[in-house]
Length: 185
Ligand code: GLN
Image 1: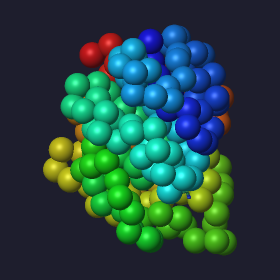
Image 2: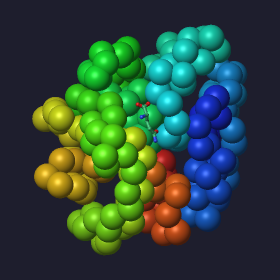
Image 3: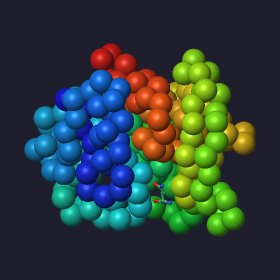
């Protein structure tokens, strides 16, 4: 059973994408629910709002503990939450993946776009960017799977995955499939 953090954002689209990729899915809103899943997706949305809701639900510490034993996949706002440092503006984050991200980094003119990316072993994937962050720094243990405009947009660190785009809004299931491979170990 794979969990999707369902406090805010486009968690329903992730649940659909995970099901298409062959997973059983459960929405997670509380610490006891988190304990019932073997992996977690943190969706896109608004990272400040999601962070406030995580505090309200007392999920910050449980999530950090979960990340030491179970895979997490963060997309867009989820990527911002998983990072180790966040700028524009500086914001608290969980420090699960050793990356530094800048929020809303493509600016107003290029708020949103759809592009095709060469994702190496995953082949070509469609990437939908919506007020996306840019990964400005990757630590030593971080593997870059795909770049866009010279910046990493899909990375992995150990069992965890981060995308600055929205794979749940595209038809293909390769990116979610990759995460499910990690879940199986
Ligand atoms: N701009 C949002 C933030 O900074 C993220 C956007 C998204 O998840 N599509 O939290």
